[in-house]
Length: 263
Ligand SMILES: Cc1cc2nc3c(=O)[nH]c(=O)nc-3n(C[C@H](O)[C@H](O)[C@H](O)COP(=O)(O)OP(=O)(O)OC[C@H]3O[C@@H](n4cnc5c(N)ncnc54)[C@H](O)[C@@H]3O)c2cc1C
Ligand code: FES
Image (tube, rainbow, N blue to C red; front, side, top):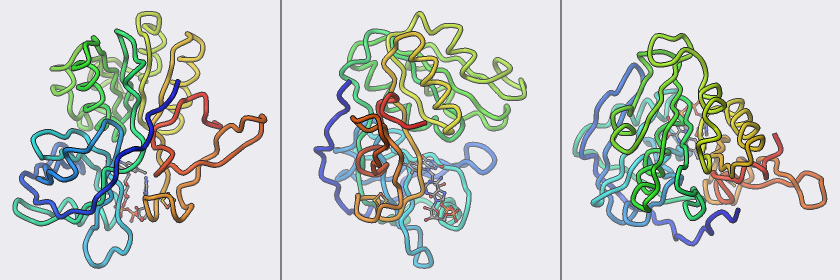
């Protein structure tokens, strides 16, 4: 599988928050009008956002959707940066750098790709599934959440294709992990794209390999510069000689062929 070349040229632009809403406890959605970046955005890429004067480093947030000059960003409030972001309201300016990174390669998904997401890893799969459908595929989604209150974007995914939901505690959908749902139905899919916690990605990659399915995973590491200059986001990859090499999640990823990752 050849992942897409990073041919886009990120731009720094000021967007304007056009909508803000709380999706669930601690989970927020911002719509940001920023045509310069939205028009270049591809599934799996991210933007790097300045989160107030007190936060020196930009924060990486995945592009959940991009249409008509507007970026849709869905994020979890964690520390100071995302708290600042959650406090934005309509009309506020936002300093963005993007789109950044290599996203999903949608050229070899086959007719029945499945998009497997866990928790806050779910948002970037929406644009990927949307584009897969535009390309003529019949995509499916398997989404996992902690519990009923943490479920996000379900209706958006259902509008694009078959969508299965699992919760860890069984309070909504199937009781258990996305991996059980994937394992049970792996034979009906032609490829896998996944985003979520590392343990989930490793398990998904193992299932895909067992069933001979191409698998792309979106990795997450702490970031500094976001453009390949500081090495903060290094992740271990398999070298051609059988050893380990290091890649930048911000520039070589965040999406990698699962077979490339040193789990
Ligand atoms: C490519 C990529 C895409 C992401 N997309 C999303 C998304 O769509 N929605 C979402 O909720 N979160 C996403 N994250 C995680 C998000 O960037 C962190 O939760 C956020 O940076 C935390 O910042 P903070 O100031 O609130 O927290 P703090 O813990 O105060 O952050 C301190 C520092 O650590 C960095 N940091 C902390 N946690 C992470 C992390 N998990 N990943 C990267 N840097 C981190 C921050 O950028 C900051 O520099 C993504 C991360 C990456 C790498
Ligand atoms: S964040 Fe600086 S190299 Fe990736």
